[in-house]
Image 1 (cartoon, rainbow, N blue to C red):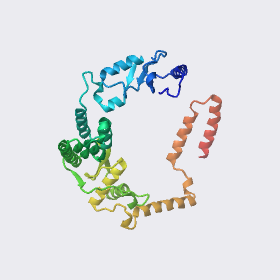
Image 2: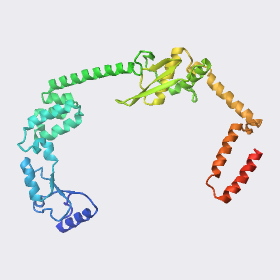
Image 3: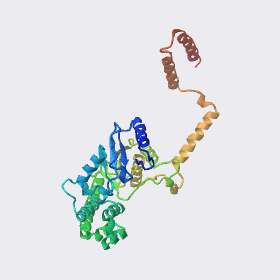
Image 4: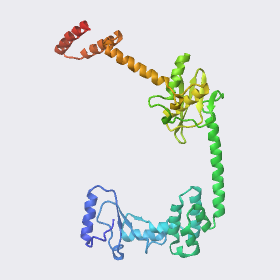
Amino acid sequence: MSFSLIPQVEDAVNLVRRIEETGVAAIAVHGRKEEERPQHPSEAFSIPVISNGGSHDFINEYTDIETFQKATAASSVMIACAAMWNPSIFRKEALVPLKDIMQDYIKYAVRYDNHYTNTKYCLCQMLREQLETAQGKKLHAAQSTQEICEAFERADFYKETTAIFEAKKTSSENETQDEDNQVEDPDNSVHSCQSQIFLSRQEYPLQITPKMYLLEWRRKEKHPQPVYETIQRPLDRLFSSVVTVAEQKYRSTLWDKSKKLAEQAEAIVCLRTLGVPEGKLREGENHLINKCKREDQEHLNNRDHGEDLAEPSHKKKKKLILLKKLLTGMCLRCHNSMKIRFHTWAATN
């Protein structure tokens, strides 16, 4: 905090005491005026006071940090600008030449793929008054990490490092592809479609999915229920599935963002391999939609004729069991009253 707006020392001390009463763990004070920095030790408070503001004209090397701390009687020192100008300010032995610091910083920036705008900003903070030199102007005009490296004669290092990264990336992609081809398929028994198959929802009717078509085909052919096995890749958290139908496995090489989409993609692979319609709008008349319409119409007809009023016997049994459970735990009076109503209902139903 800054006390430049509070001219009276007593007012500043009272303000800090009020802040202290709120339960804060520490308070940082930035000295705005030269005469205020070393002349007002922070001895009036029980919480730690961190001094700040010595970078511009006081802290030039490591030993100055301790001197500044003693002069302000603070528990510790906060450093910002001096650390940006030369990070070796924290080195006890001596400052490292700025040229070496910038060269090392560029290496780290390239190796860890730091964004060029951040790298450029930090280097500009180090150059400071040298920004008007030829090197400073090149840095100021740089629009990429490569151009920054060229300004500091590190173009060869940039090319070598990026070449290594590209080689590793290509190798990793090849390994990932090999893993994808072997997912849940150690004996190469999976029918894998090499094209990127995924569910495009606008190509299907609102209430129809490929999984429904596969299930309907399974019923007609009297095969067991399709079994979906889904895994998630830790690297990007995408999903891949394998569906087993009639003792055959099917999968797509495309990884999806959700388990549901992955399973729909595998159903499409299976249907296309079998040569079975998958329910797309362009396939013409959709027998599943017609089936749903017929079932809905039958239900409406049953309601019109009052056929849905007669409950199956198994539903009655469930109701009897539920009513018996309700009687448990009631007081004697409520129990007897409910028991009479229950027997009356059972006799009429």
